[in-house]
Image 1 (tube, rainbow, N blue to C red):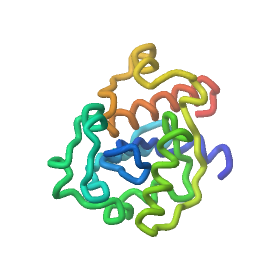
Image 2: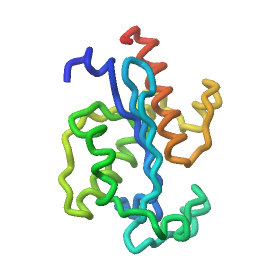
Image 3: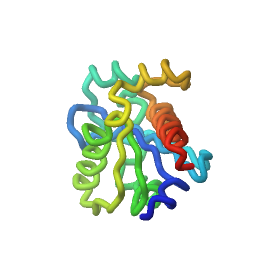
Image 4: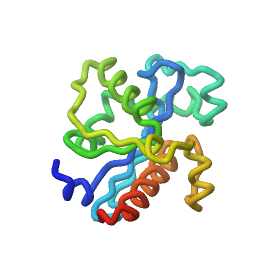
Length: 167
């Protein structure tokens, strides 16, 4: 994609996982930004493989097996979010360390194709954790809620773009 197209739209994503295994997505948060405005928000609970959770992960995000017992597995919700990721500019906070590998491992787990997309990471730019950045920049955050984290990441990215006068 050319740089002008990048400035027009991007997708901010965040995943919560049920365990330390990268294929255990239990929540997807996705925010679509076009021309500097949020045009779509998606917040989905997802049943991880075998609906299995580690207690310490539930302690972090508050999602437990009872919450995803009737949720769809990732392969059944992928069609709802794929077009926001495939061939798009995708931003995540700690994306290279967490969100992008989680997406890839989950897609591979279900035998789905990993799409091409351009990856950007707000952690690499700001060099601080999301909660601290949100506090410093007065960005609302319900940390470890995937949608809230995605919205905060998207806001940080927008601020970076505006600072660079690219939107």
